[in-house]
Image (cartoon, rainbow, N blue to C red; front, side, top):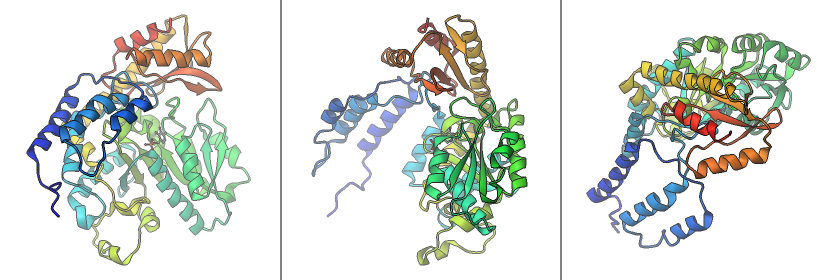
Length: 449
Ligand SMILES: *Cc1c(COP(=O)(O)O)cnc(C)c1O
């Protein structure tokens, strides 16, 4: 009956911890490669069997054959999509969360973990200028945050008497794809507002919603678009959303982190109007996956929508004023205490270190814009507002960008995937790793000559 798999095995612990120690010590980590299916299948063949394997064999299969087929999003040369750069402290504490089986579902079960997570949520709410009492929960990502917020927006619109079969939500043509998906899930319809210079403005919003005010449930603004790092006119749009009686949600999954930069924070002042706000610490706040902070101006409203009721859960819901059940603020129940690695790292390093790390990416984006402007074969498409840089290689077709990107990765010089901007395939960098240097950028730009 006893299998031994629940017994402590010192050798197994040493083996895995030694691997983690080595991975943490790599400066920098290798970029690594896309996978080849036949090779991965061969490596995995027979690996799961009735009797199991030696741990060392399984770990070496992972280390030597599977891990190299995972492009390292924490490499300073990973400049595609939105990269990652978790601090060592946050990664180590992620191991603590795992080894202690720390969950963060309810106050009854996990008050210690929930208190620490809430300390971080309060810090973010304060930087965002949200009122005292704002609060929420760490969810798995911006997508989960956007979805949870839209569920609340829909239910509240219904409660205040909005009867349209398919309520409308004003979004911009630059909103993240997860917003459209969230609306699809909750049965609301996007009312797409054309942007002015790719930014959602109050004037454009007013024009777009004219005549549809009675069907409007919410307005979604973006604080740092994924494609170009553009912050919408949060002040104007937020004030208008208020005036229209619509829920105001701000998607700052990528750019919300720039609240830590004193230089940029004034552009986020309109967050004071937000009913809900999302920022992904697993992006630009240097936390491990998967971690997104979802905040509500009035968490009670979210609680009224998301609380799950069942006889076996009754014990979680008391009238104690200090009670805070993270499960009540999104569509989930059981959840990993995924805010704790960020809490530990913030407590260890302090907020100034976070400010400096965010500023480093902002500086590198500005420097890169200058490097591009100084090269006749390149053309900067717009001045970077945050840490995304969009540019064109004069004379190139889409195929040129793709084959250039493949070669860069093959040579382990960089992972740079092209994007589409105004219908054209162009080059894009997203900086957020403090280890990305001007030298690395120059090396990449030189390959475009
Ligand atoms: C990344 C991103 C999302 C989605 O977040 P996930 O963590 O990938 O689910 C949503 N909105 C914006 C603006 C993003 O950049």
